[in-house]
Image 1: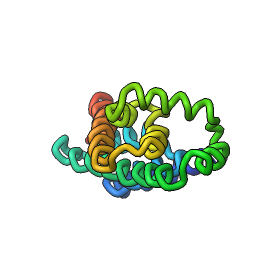
Image 2 (image 1 turned 120 degrees about the vertical axis):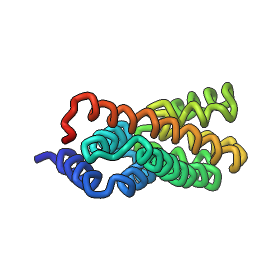
Image 3 (image 1 turned 90 degrees about the vertical axis):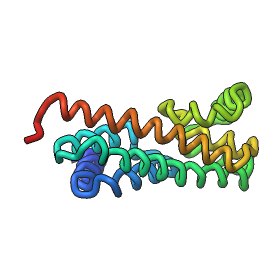
Image 4 (image 1 turned 180 degrees about the vertical axis):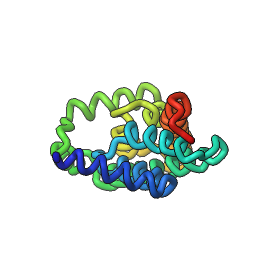
Length: 175
């Protein structure tokens, strides 16, 4: 079995036992160390919730926990970018195949859309992981960053968790 397959099975098993904690941890870890895609974890959690008979009202805490986990994780990246600066950060980002040219494109996009870039960026796959870097490098105000990150992350959590939940309801495997 491939290491990634084993990892996915571990995540699915963990979510089956600990939905709420799993959502929080996946969101937190994904934003700091991106191998855990919330695009896979959140719908799976929603699906499992539907299969466990969890009501829509009980999904709301999952959505907020996803938003909180993402906000904490992405705030770490923001602070790293803010404190380390461009030169040091680029040396580290090369390990993730992020070049200066890619970073410049993200910064241009950030400058074009201003603070709203964080809100929008938290909803767009791939941009989700990157948007904290230009926000930190360009010294976005921390309270605004946290607010826009939380709102965008809750929107992302809602969309992905509810997609999995409604898929589970639609196929009707629940007893």
